[in-house]
Length: 281
Length: 298
Image (tube, rainbow over all chains, first blue to last red; front, side, top):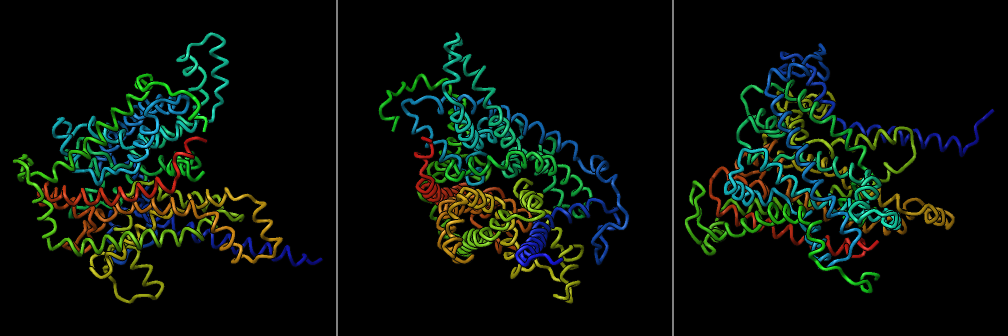
């Protein structure tokens, strides 16, 4: 009983691809695996010369003690407040705009979409001095409000864009039927379009949340007080100290990374189309 | 096409629906942009007080800054190498992500991580890996027999910029390869079948049939990536702070240093205006490539 040659060939090809695929995956995982190994090491192991690949003793309690050893609890609290508020404000601003743009043709629509699309590519990094100036004038340095408003504004373009494409995909007739049944235009939006666009709203919400969660440069510039710093700023400042607590630094980093990676996987399929403004679907 | 025949609604009807978006974009994107331009023409003292109009003085100061030319050269290398290498690696990578094999899902999820994770943290991890005493990289290179003595890849000016380039390529790969993957998936199976029937070989099929179909996705990914790479701040800042000296600065980190370390807001604003104009050129390219009007109608 011999297996026919083409099947053997296909199996070899599959095997080779699997090996290449896993090797590639490992390259992408490498910095995070290293982080994980460091996070589990006891204090003394960190400064071993030469270092070891794996912890000699696996200290899982590092993931708890990170809240005591560094101000990680404060950083996380700040990050959660900023990310959630940015998400809420972003949704409140972008849902009606995304809906109206999808359903109506009005004077200035082209201009509005053009401005939205152009600002999608603006980056706070370039405009940092302007942002800093504005925030000093408004007295919003070292406040959550300042960070929330800037984060919301810079992620709005993506939000409007992806939401309007979701609303466009809902047949207009469903809303018209609701209006015939006695709904007002606004009720038709609220009771029919909104629930149907829920996947789009969730995608947008997650996108804004992750962007605000990971934001660094604006917070680094505006939040000089540790009490207002998100983890991206707080952890980055830790590496500047004479003695870096790498194990706690990376335990905290992993706690900060894991939830957003999981969320990201859920929205990945919509991201490409949203980030390229629908030019790649 | 429909748009031309249907009567347009007046703008005031749209206003209540768009007001939140307009408020945030005008208030927190366009205002700082205007503020930045104005500051580049002003004399600002070290405490941030505006003393008056400076005309083109800030721009003259910037042009005379002898640290600028090497930074400009390095920024061009940064942009060309990172975007070019990212595209070159993403093409086969997207092909691999699209192939059928055991572990394909695992590969796709692994590639997502550098995209989703905070750039600061990824850069910190690489800084730690490259640490001359405690880092994993020296251990690996020694175990592989590539080096005998420990090396300080980040501290040495001849290698530190190369390390930054590698990390920047690493974090750019996910977005670009996912865009190309989406492009690949939009190619109908029949096209590939037809090519096979015609007897075109793997390599030839790729360059004559697949690549031309991928070109729109390829170009859009290139432009968007160029903007990301040009603006990239956390990688350089976390790993080397642009140092030693200005050895690893790009115009983005250089502008930051002039403003927040040297306290020369005016000169920094003029450099930031230059950065802004470069990005604006990319945006114009993007608008042309994305044919956004048509995309919007569908």
